[in-house]
Image 1 (cartoon, protein in one colour):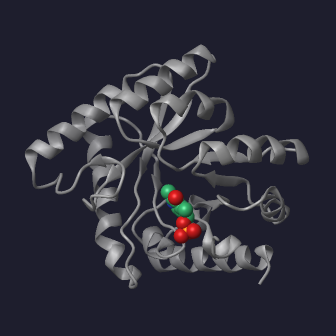
Image 2 (cartoon, rainbow, N blue to C red):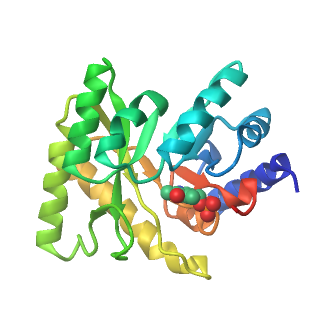
Length: 240
Ligand SMILES: *Cc1c(COP(=O)(O)O)cnc(C)c1O
């Protein structure tokens, strides 16, 4: 299968998941995760209309992104989806259009200051650790709806980040644990959607974006309200 054929199949699956959930496919943004793949793979996806790409490592992105941007008439929209160390934040700001992985006040403050230096507002998502897996990045929010202390901490972190002048907080992002049966990810996605609704309501902020769902589980994520899906392997094949 070619990259174009893979994208056609993914779009079909997105449309089918939307139909099952009574949603409009226009609500879903497909982010092709091009990490480890060369600029040619990004260009191939662009020829069939993909405009959003995700990368997770600053080093790789700092050569790939300028390379791709110089080779196409209109640069795509670049999403930083990987963990960012504070000291690398200054490399991220000029390269990426949106950062999905802001998971601490410290990192948010750093991004806000850098964006202000560049006279821009950086669109970001707050990465949330819903599942409680020790290895996962993200603001810990397991059991937020039952545990008042967890909830108070999450609310305080979000309040402080939303108040930063250089950021535009668009929504929430999560990674579900890997299960062979994608159905098992459903409660994780449903919980992130509920957290988004509660935060938006309590803090009176618009949080339109829910970035959730990868190759293994994007259809379930869409059924549970995802607006951005981050798909690598189903488009570009297995990574080396
Ligand atoms: C690699 C990655 C993806 C894409 O995963 P696939 O299984 O290849 O679809 C999505 N989100 C994040 C944060 C990633 O690091």
